[in-house]
Image (cartoon, rainbow, N blue to C red; front, side):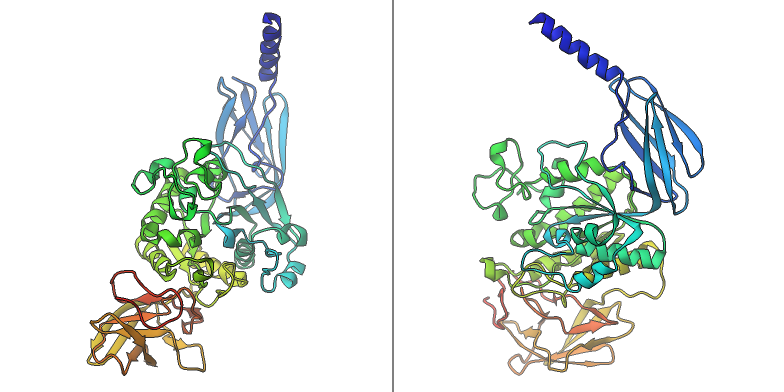
Amino acid sequence: MKRTLLTLFTLITTLTLHAEVHMPTFFSDGMVLQQKNNAPLWGTAKPNATLRIKTSWDNKSHSTHVSSDGSWRTTVMTPPAGGPYDITIDDGKSLTLRNVLIGEVWLCSGQSNMEMPMEGFKGQPVDGAMVDLMNSSDPNLHVFTVKRASAFTPQSDVVGTWQAANPKSIRSFSAAAYYFGKQLRESLNVPIGLILTSWGGSSCEAWMNRSWLKEFPQVQPENNSDPRNLYIVPTTASDIKSKNRTPTVLYNAMLHPLIGYSIRGVIWYQGEDNVPRYQSYSAMLSRMIKGWRDDWQQPELPFYFCQIAPYDYSLIGWKVNSALLREQQQVVEKTVSHTGMAVLMDAGLRYGIHPRKKREAGERLAMLALSDTYGFDGLSKNARYESVEFHSDTAVVRFDRSRMWIYFDTDQPSRNFEVAGSDRIFHPAKAWISTNRLYLVSPEVNRPVAVRYAFHNWAVADLFCDGLPISSFRTDTWDDNVDISSGVEYDK
């Protein structure tokens, strides 16, 4: 027995002393590094060795020391966009990373509507995807998909491969992320790298560090079989009710390994799973954004997200109005700097939680990035509800970011507006526009005190400005016992 242990110890020691350079999977052939940036590189190598790194874009060599446990970390200054280049890492036995592009790198995360590939889900297609796949080949657009994984403790690596865009690789890649990246390629004319880390049905809590969740006392262990209506802090395997909803498990397995990889910003499409817990969503998403920014040590890291699209959640038995979650998302855009929200009120699907219009999602996210991150002039943002005034029987609504004036994108009278008096019962309202003001009256409400627009699970946007839909909104702050379908009368 002693001899066996001694032999095993000798073997491990020998392997450690002659360890080859190893790096996480996202440092590999075909990767894209953020341009003009001190890009971190890290991995393992022979303990206490001097590691030499050579970058072909400047033919310079750098050196760094490998710690006694075999780990190492350093940075290389990347040039302006270009490539392909090579990076060679040598501790006596070299590793060469080939076809390395330098450009703009974005992290793409969320739940199923971010994960939904160009090929769609079975019986759930993406509009126009098959035609767009024929034109998807681009050697300067590379994508990396993190394989689904969950863990109770922070991990150091993920499973995935960098791939150049072509019909085969893009067919199985996120449609929303692809349309985002494709637009950046066309507008910026530089290499683009997209890292997709998403999981359908995942909660916001699953993408958060455990320490951040201490700020939310409702996030605690519970014994309840419905993961959508509870919060679980994982402690043992028996606590898991769902691998993609349990708090922290996706942060640990699918985000933590990526922390430090040089990125320009983040796009996010998530919120559907949090509809039953909408009350805390704005605070929770804001805390998550801050946490990710702290992790990357980029306090102004751009974070652009999709507002969830309309869908009739009563079809799955949820008795909560998803407009309340959309309202929480608007709060984040208004209160957290360097964020932007892509409104999808015209891109929903009443009988499906996975809308087909992913081009709209990706391109509107790209519009936000091009405007705010890259400084493109002349691009628009969604107009937003600003204020309301009541004059006798008429409500007058104002909007900000509406320089080009609001308008109805329909040839029928709008059925999306409602007003209520002091009794808090909402009735359909006639709506018209004069210059840049919206006017509302209802024969059943003599003195309105509140207005709502498309404030239901399911609605089709008909109020637009400069080609973009305006989000559902309400002017009241009454209790949230609101109708979830398309009725016009609400309980007090």
